[in-house]
Image: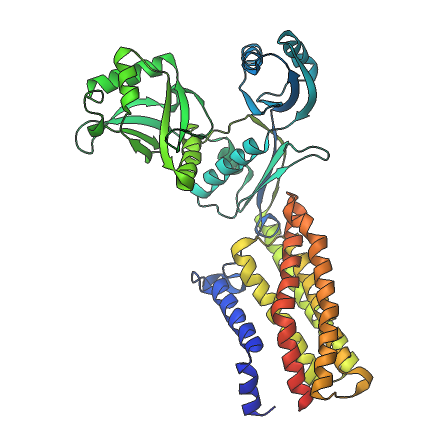
Length: 486
C-alpha cells in the first residue's frame, strides 16, 4: 500500500481511535507509574492463581429473623439482648439481625415470651452489615499496601442475606493473612491541652458499643453514636474538667486516633458540656458534617471507633494458599497458552484465505483488542485464571467476527464496488452486533453476582465484546476496504 494511502488511513477517526487506545493502554501498563523492571507484566494486577498467596473464607456468626408482633419492638430487642448477650439490630419494620449464631429453636421461646412470632429465619447478616464488613476489611488491607486484595460476599441460593465473606490476598502467606483479618487497631481518645499538645484520656476498650451513621433531622448533619463503659465515662469527664474543656470547649478539642493517626478532631458541643457538668455521660455522638461528604466521614469514623473490629463475629470455615513458585508456573503456562492460541488462529485463517494482506491485519486487529482490554483491566480487574480464560475466549470470538466481515465482503470471491461493500459490511456488522449483545446479556448476571471464580471471566468477556463493537470492528472494516481497493 502506498505511503499517501497509509497516511489517509491513519487519519480516519476509526483507525486513529484504535491507535490512541493501543498507545494509551501500553502507557497504562508500563508507564503509569513506570514499571519496566517487571518485564512484560508491567503494572498488570495478578490474582491469587498467578501471583501466589492465600485465601480465607469466613462465616458470619449472625442470623436474620423475620417476625410479627403487636407489642413494642423495643421490648423484644431488649429481651433478646439480655438473654443472648448479643447485639440486636433492627433492619426494617419486620426483620431483626441477631449478631450471634443461635439456632431457631433457642430463640423461639424468647420471641414467644415477648409476644412475637418468628416468620422467617436465615443464617447470615443484612446487606448493610455485609457491606460494612467489606469496607472494614478493604480499609485494613489497603492500609497495609495490599490493594490487590479481593473481597467477595457470598450469599446462599434462595436467600438475600450474605452468609460468607471470602478474602484473597495475592503474595501473602497464610499466617499473615490470618493476622490481617484478626488484627485490631489501637484506638485512642485524647484531649487538647495547650496549643497542639494533647493528653491521653482512654483507649478503645472503654467503648462498649458503636451505632450506625445517623442524620440529625433538625440540622441535617451526619454523626455516629457510641457508648462508654462506666469507667470510661468517668475518665472522660475527669479529663474534660482537668484540662478546661468544659469552660472553653473551642480551645480543647476531642481528638481520636487510630494507630497514632488522627481520624477525628472537634470541640465538645454545648449540650454535652451541660450534661457533663452534672455527671458522667456514657452516650455520645460525633458529628461529621452534612451531605455525601458527611455521610462518608461518618462511615469511616464508625470503622475507626470499632478500631478495625468487624461489627459481627466471623469464623474461618475454609482456607488455602498457592505457593509463589506455582503462581509463576501458572503465569508461564498462561503466556504459552495465549501465544499458542494466537498462532493457531493465524495458521487457520491463512489456510482459509491464503492471502497475507488479509491475515496480517486480522491478527494485528485481534492483538490490538487484547492490548486495549489489558490496558482497561489493569485499573479495574485482577488477572486470574478465569480472567485469562476470558481473554482467550475474546481472541476466538474476535477472529470469528472478523471472518464474518471478510467473508461477507468477499462474497462469491469478488471484490465489490464501494457501494456494495458498504451494504455487505453493514450486513456483517449487524450480525456481529447481535452476537455481542447476546454475550453481554448472558454474562451480565455473572458480572454482577459475587461469584469470585466466575466474575472475572464475565467482566473480561463483556469488555472484549464492547471494545470489539465500538473500536476494533469498525477499524478493521476500514482497513479491509483499503486493502481490497488496492
